[in-house]
Image 1 (cartoon, rainbow, N blue to C red):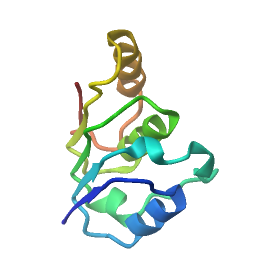
Image 2 (image 1 turned 135 degrees about the horizontal axis):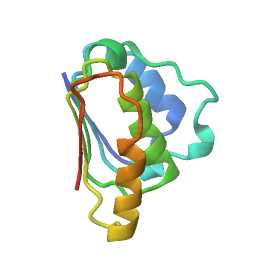
Image 3 (image 1 turned 180 degrees about the vertical axis):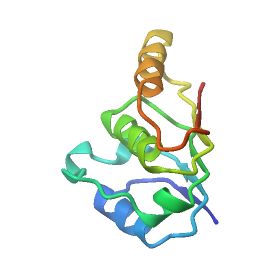
Image 4 (image 1 turned 90 degrees about the vertical axis):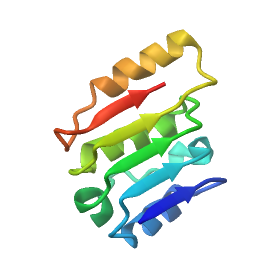
Length: 119
């Protein structure tokens, strides 16, 4: 199953939705910057799709917000079968892109096969 989400999304709604998509294998998150980082729960519980099914995650409109960074780390830390985390940050300066890349590269990953593609 593949899911593409865009527009304004509340974090609670996103987590609720993902918890009800246990077969989700491919996730595309457009406009993730619209998620208010203040809405992140203190303790995030990985949904079943993250822990057992998610193979790819694609963030085509990455702008470097705290929400995007936290979500990217959450996916890599909790997706045991993740093979590809693809992030495109066209609007980022070279310096900010390099800083984000270093931070994401240092993030622990649940999947030994997870490749981070940051463009």
